[in-house]
Image (cartoon, one colour):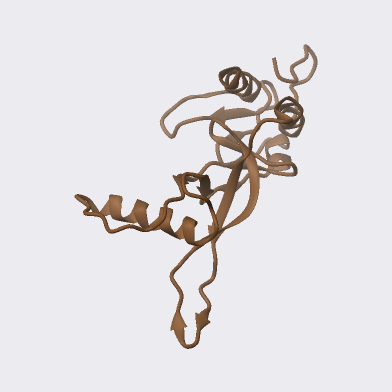
Length: 165
């Protein structure tokens, strides 16, 4: 299992270091954020999403070289086209996909938006950060759904790594 020994529970930061080593060479996905709209010749520009980094997508986590994030929205960039929508939510998703295309992402490229940086030091000290909770007996725990129970982070990461194989 990922970083587990019979001694003290492993720290969250240590577990993610092991995950990074195991994911080396695997493809990453883009992290995006809304760009501030500048005016050009007095006219406002359409909103766009620009690349701010990349990370491995592992379940509810985005694992970057120097940080771990909780997943937010996941979308695929898509150029604008005239479409009919049956729901406002479809219109919103299409607008975000078009904003990603305007920001320089290729059609079909996966973009993560609205992610949240996790504070692993707080978790290791027994606190809470996003879906992670520190537990002095069991080590870091993860709540992988809003209504779900917690489970050991090491087990969750091992399961997610197994799904990638």
